[in-house]
Image (cartoon, rainbow, N blue to C red; front, top):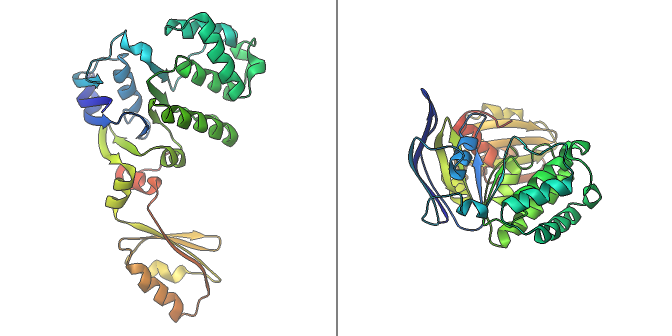
Length: 300
């Protein structure tokens, strides 16, 4: 395991921001952090990076504590962006690359490649304050990966981006993972976490309420979703006490059932009523379903 968090707590006065958190984050691949505002995600990231000292517990990367020397192999994209607005993109990123140990020429080469990839090479000599928020976000991301980190921590990397740029950055993150970078990130976009992450942790008030492999988490959740498209209203299913949730759709409904086998009973009800069924499909629970049940709120 590349990153180990053992019984870590962080207190600010009488407030416990993180409470006895234990995680083994696998080497390579991507690990997702979920939780509402104030759940402890950013505090955990800052403790990993050494920006905050934990009140108790132990954090180790490859079996060793993270120091100033090893931090050169780590990239960090903070939720609160920290670019220098008056500097040009070139001045800023070369400076930040050199702080991470890159030679100036290497930093220039890496910068050129990333600007080309994100289709913003014409902003090389623009001041950051002249860029849109989305393009500033790309520059901030480049600053976190310019030195080719072995561990990359991304705090809400996709916030403020339109769908095209989300996909562009998502592809870049996936490629870094395939090249061997270990990536830990938080995101409000459940679908992105579901697509990218094999393992994750859901925090609630500083405690891990769900953690582990995503497939295992979905399997252990037990409940299934049943999507039905039909040629008439299905409101009568609301009265079925074994249906845990009923959500109307434009052309049918989405049900949550405890037992997959109960779908057969629902199908029989539809056939008895001679309802024409266009779609009848059982799906795994979504990450959003699991989040709402475990945390008790939607993630907005």
